[in-house]
Image (cartoon, rainbow, N blue to C red):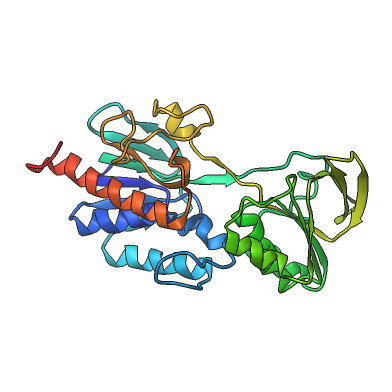
Length: 310
């Protein structure tokens, strides 16, 4: 069994920030990531609200953080899913599909996954016209007609990105106003090739081998119309990846988010939560970074027990 001071589960922006501060504090630090380091920031077409970077690709920002983390001496294990945790004792045990690790402190930064709209055709056409990542799949729809479902920041950002690729973008929102930041909302509404369907829901995604149309329901009139399109980008938010933490007796709220205090501490001593998996009310790259820093510094305090420890 490998022994570490600090193990961070998840190498998204929050986990990477924690890795930087953990390693710089002198802790022997390991990040374990089931996919590729960078997290969901990699999928952001454009990031315009992270301080110091008025305009940067999400993948580029994530890669800068990954490289920064590595330069501090933190080790990042990619493509290594965690399968179970034992967190009750002073020595925390992390089991993956490859090995077992022991640490004095654990930071859970497992993020969240995209929500589905749950309509007929969504699962059947996933990868054949249905996507949850505009920057990943957008170039496949150059010059075509696409639907974006949602009304928040991610939906508006994706619609803006796709407007530079697709011939037409149809933004489907079940309410009559956006939840997105005002600047994003204005930008979307200014695009000539973006048409907004207010008070509308997607009821079915149709096609044969690939997506060819969607059925739309106007929630006010009850009218159903069929719209010919080539792709559907679902952008309606996320759900936390917290089951493995919950199974290890980390406390979560009624919606599954890990409950944390101001120092990112969970209900278990030496166990912290960071980023989109927590019940922090603001889910942004900047807040995840701040949470990661706070958790790493408190983990240092937990392990080293300096005079100011409270």
